[in-house]
Image (tube, rainbow, N blue to C red; front, top):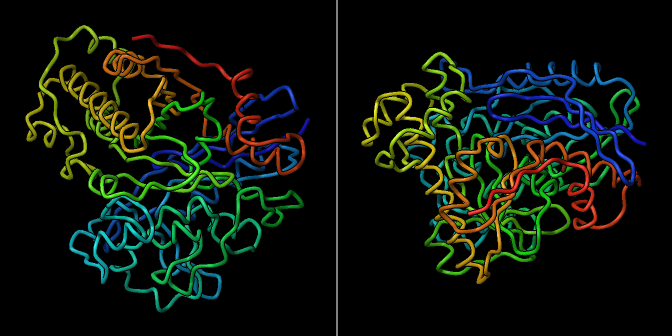
Length: 428
């Protein structure tokens, strides 16, 4: 048996999870969880990544004897270094600095190059608003920044690089838009260095890439990684770069083992999370139970740009035509999210020319039975919910394979997930 620590950083919390692995077993244990969220500075929203690193090291220390470590996080954001020191805490992608940014290339030219959907806060747009890039000698995405602090090794893991708008999706190398400060590209499974004698291994460092590894997908099934964001799509072998894909604003991000994550971002649980915070964090399970019995209410566009920034969320929901009573708001947000997820699943199948036999929801949102059943009913397809910890599972599996505890491709890794991790099946 080998023990692998997954440092998994999300937009609202981080944790260190230890996976104990044999060829026939996979057991996870969360050893440390810590809060995360954007912090308002004088110049905008930032991440306290220095505190995240301190908390991650605390978790790794609590984890005990380890055989390896892997780091994953959300995508897009980065830190700038000069002589090994941060120039400033990384900006949060929800900051308004990219609101009026324009690039020297058109949206269509950018899509042809990187294959990504248009998101106005992607790294390439952040760099257009960046005032200190010229002062930096290195630029590291968030998981690569923590890996650098753990090991002293610089580089950019490929799955996360593919989210930036700076990678050529065809050649899988940096495009001419990429600044010189970006380091060499690193494939998942590579050893990056050591922390206190423990190997640090590149995993699918974009958390969705790790979540795809940890999803027990059946052939052709759609996958939804549902947390703060909902990443909805298919796993393919090559990018789809048609006019229809561009018009539908789908993306072609890279996955582990050369796969393509053909998907579209949906707002996910973000709006509901923000409302819960405003309401003093009431019991969500009880709210969902009450919402299930509440009469249906008009839907809102869960992806409306006005809902992107934090704060005053309930009022913005009302401004879009939503209700004001908390139970009705929860019903509105759940139903609106189900509709957005379902439409995106249907579009993914149509754009890729595939018939979708079912849906696999992974991540924290897979625990929300109201969403899962609603999606199964809306699509008329079976929905497999779980594992909840798909990101940590995928992170650990790539580490275990790199050390030789596991062998084979993604199908082999997912076979272990299917026989060891709890899932719930919802029928239409």
